[in-house]
Image (cartoon, rainbow, N blue to C red):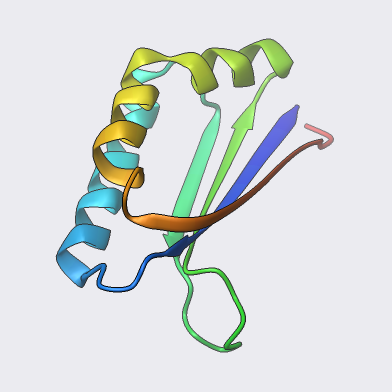
Length: 99
């Protein structure tokens, strides 16, 4: 199994409504992209000041599944509509996990 973790720091001025729309858009992706096996996301709860603002954790059977998700038109559209312009910093990693 392959796990993809991506973290975002929002630009100044991103409001709760925008973050809510991002969450709603992320909620819709698993139904639209069959390669997703598990999908979790959420806002940082603010315990540590230097943390990123938001995280997405997604599981796939293998690299092919991840690449299918990465390049899927629905996912790309979500990024264009909700992430571009709202995120100032992004970090991501993909790693293997035992099923």
